[in-house]
Amino acid sequence: MSAVLAIAAAELAIARRNLWIAIATALMVLFSAVLTFAGSGPTGTLGVDLLTVAVTSLTTLSVYIVPLIALLLAFDAVAGEAERGTLALILSYPVPRAAILGGKFLAHLLVLAGALATGYAVAGGMAWTLDRVSGESLAALLRLFWTACLLGAAFLGLGYAVSARVRNPGAAAGLAIALWLVFVVLYDLGLLGALVADAGGAFTQTVFPWLLIGNPADAFRLANLPQGEVAALASGVAGASRAVSGAMALASLAIWPAGALLLAWAAFRRVMP
Image (cartoon, rainbow, N blue to C red; front, side, top):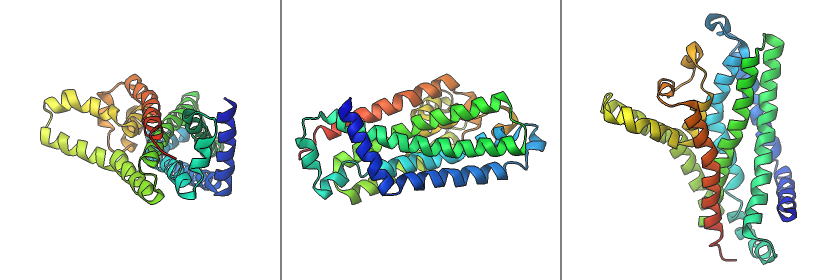
């Protein structure tokens, strides 16, 4: 455990020196403030408080930005060490590779969680200042935070797997962007195309819900999608939320980080110094 904490401390120092902590936090604060302020308009029409609208907007934002930040934090984890020549030194220490990976994961998850907590706290503070805040909306904001952490953890694991597999920072960066495009953009477009072609047939009724929760980005969106009129503000899969329960989406979100880290460990254990 001490080895994991030592590696995590070193990774946090690197993240602070490379401005990753400042950049991730600034991004979340900026987007959270803008979306919360912009969402103050429709609250009267929808009959909900500002924080509920803000959580809906932040859910849509987080689907795109959380995986991107996680992949940018992770793609250099092994490939960068190999290019700088420090990987052989690290692997020469009497520390299990799982502990090395665990330390990097802990540090990067703390960076991501800190940025998310700061950004969402800004949104909550603005909503409390500008409008009433209900207990339900506060619970939704807390759910958004920990599910966003799970979403980020899944993409951190995928980023480590890519980084250990190619061991070249340029190639790892390219594959990380490709992963982001597939999981966040192209996957939904493919599902929507299949739905149009199926026209309400067997695929729509039986296969589509499983494919939807099989993607961590979609599972995150479904887990945080509010019901009622506010759901109309969410894009893409609002209608599909009725076919998939929140418990199934949360289960998918809980499984993905473990599976991605297992994949990363399997790739990292084959890396030769």
